[in-house]
Length: 210
Image 1 (cartoon, one colour):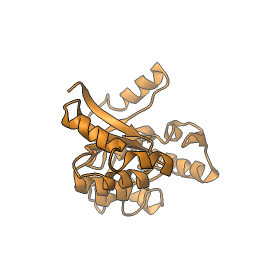
Image 2 (spheres, one colour; image 1 turned 90 degrees about the vertical axis):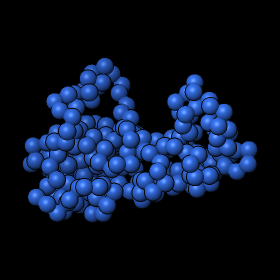
Image 3 (cartoon, helix red, strand yellow; image 1 turned 180 degrees about the vertical axis):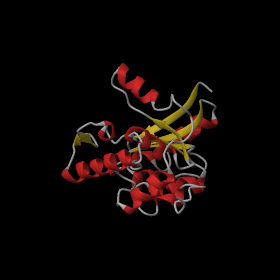
Image 4 (tube, helix red, strand yellow; image 1 turned 90 degrees about the horizontal axis):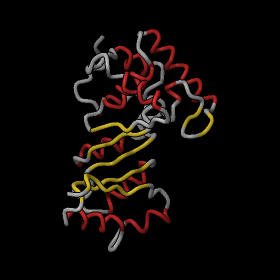
C-alpha cells in the first residue's frame, strides 16, 4: 500500500468527535481506504483516553489497528492503565507519546506543555531521588517504563535539536536489555510514585521479588 498507516487525530471534543463516527464519518472513510489498499493500518492519534475508547467502541472491531496516545502512561501519570488494558484485550497496539512528560523527566520545567505545578515538581524530585538511590538514569527509567506493557509496540519521542536526538539515541546504545531493577518499580509503588495496580498490565514482572 502507498501508506503504512493513516491516523485520525485529536477528536477530543464533541464537535470534533461527532464527524468521525457513524455513517459517512471519518472512521468509515478510513476503513474504505484500508479496504481499497491505500493503507496497511488505521490508527488514532489522541491525548484523551476517554475519547479514544469512545472512537474505538463506535466502529467495528478490527478497523483500528493501533492508537498513538500521549500523556496518559508515563512516570508522572498512569491514568491510561484501563485504556491500555482495553486495547490489549482487543489486540490493538499502542504507540506511546510523551514518555518524558513534556521534558519534565529530562530536566525541563514544563509538564503537559505548561509550567509544572508544585505537585508535579515534588513528584519529579521523588523520581530523581529514587533513581539516584538505584543508580539508574531517570530518562532511561522513563523509557523502560513506557515499554514495559506488551501492548506498547513503539514509543514516539519528540526532539527539537540534533543534540536531543543524540541524547535520546544514547539511552539504548550501551545495551538493548533492561537495566532497571524490579526493586525500583516496587519502591516506586511504596512511595506513591506509581499506582499500585500498574503491574497488572505487564506479563512476567514479579513485583514481589527482590
